[in-house]
Amino acid sequence: RDSLKNMAFGVIINTMKSERIYCVMGFIEAYKRLEKLCGEVLNNERRVTAYIDEMINTSRGAYFVRDWDEDLKQLKHYRWIRNQIVHDPSCSEENMCSDADTQWIVDFHARIMNQTDPLALYRKATQPRKKQATKNAEGQYYQEQHQKQYYKTSNRFGCFITLLIVAVVAMIVIWLSR
Image 1: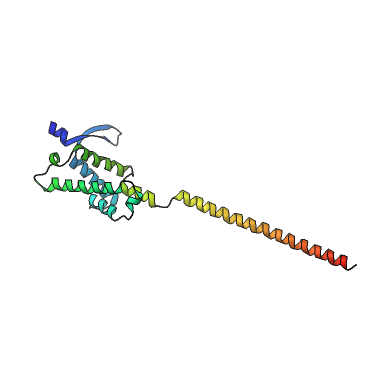
Image 2 (image 1 turned 60 degrees about the horizontal axis):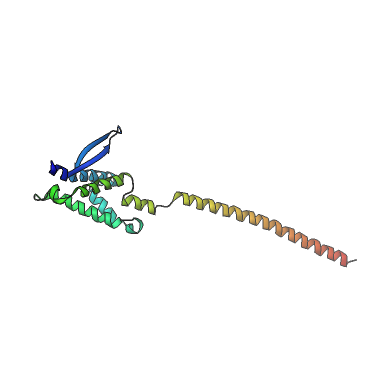
């Protein structure tokens, strides 16, 4: 029983009926869930490896997303642990990982679901903001309308000044011709 406790920890899962079910999940089960989700999100059968490759190939990810490098390092490490457990007969969950490792995998799964994982945060940080674009478009529209109104006003003012000068010149000519 102690080895089961050391091997796994409790996870609360919300089912479709919003019931809370307590289940025991070990590292491999948590990793399988993460693999399935990564495969679905990226539409790639390489799953966690595809997620890792996407992070590696994303330029300036660490610039836009806090803890980018740490998450990438952890994903690579946990992929290595998973491979060791699966392919090396001398490796098992008991001697390769702790509850904290499993918890990290579960938390990362939740981050993907909540769109707070590194790739989602990167996309949010680098995509153009619609509200700002709308404000810029509105600002540009306002500026164009203001310029049109200014030119209309200045044209009227210019005409008025021209007429005033013509009237003054006409008065001077009439006064001088007397």
